[in-house]
Length: 390
Image 1 (cartoon, rainbow, N blue to C red):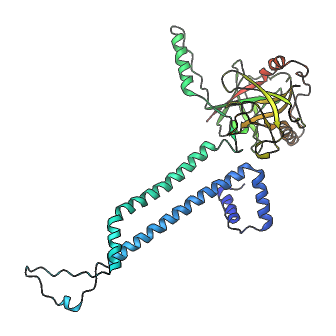
Image 2: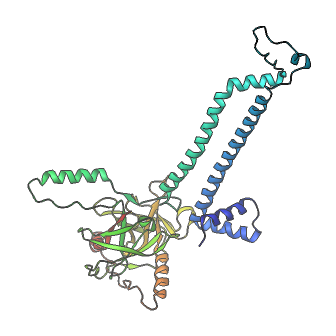
Image 3: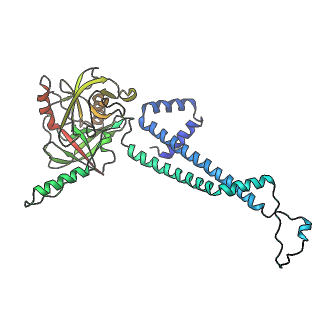
């Protein structure tokens, strides 16, 4: 597994032209296909650019210090023989040496004397700016880390202020009744949905990124502990498994997973948890590729919000065709969803790796031929809040 140092050595060779033509072509192909690798290259270029500017400032500072040292040395100017033989002052003090400096040196000393404070301040500001830039980069990387795909991902940060206000209001309304302990709502949340009846679920990778623990919550507020069993960063997918002994299974899943491609212009819809209650939104499939032509994603014209990530995307016949991932930063109505065909490939490879213990995916579709409200009533019990604790 490559470390950051390995990546930086590779990028350094790439930018300096030291890579052989086949290696350079292979790297450029990977950069075009792998958003995470492209981000690493961008971070490398930002960091090296900052360090280069810092080195230039240090070199300038060394030159200025050298000029100052030369001027200080010129203060001990050689005296002429006549001046050395001059008698002492009548006061008895030793004679002071007469300084002889050139007109150029005099101008430099005047310039240094009048601008020394300003230049020292400028040097200090430059150093502080470099360190502020480096710290800002780390902060920016930490803030941007959930988005590896070039667009705004939709993990929702739990609003602690509103939650605290609700708890206070509830406490006021329940004065005189037995107190109940407050429930930790987690730091982030997204949406997930059932993959199999025996406790496997799907969500977006960026929803669970950095999680210490996960909690799955149904619309009737049942909660179960879950653990990630596999993640696919490139396609923003994560498979979770419920570990609670109290979990008895989801029952028969009413939808099926589409293995092929969906058609441009199809009507599609999603359910998710951008707030506490389940929210429905619909639209159409507006492109068969995602952000910057990524063929692992669809573009859809559905208004999605933080908390929708990981939610199911279904067509009119109740086939699950995708998993909501994010939205374009400058176009409010352009959203993206990972294609279900990539999820099916992942499940197939994992089933093969489990030596015959395949995932029991639903085979029959109970939603086909029913109205949209009927589909939602059957679907809502299989869509969950994914709460992230860090």
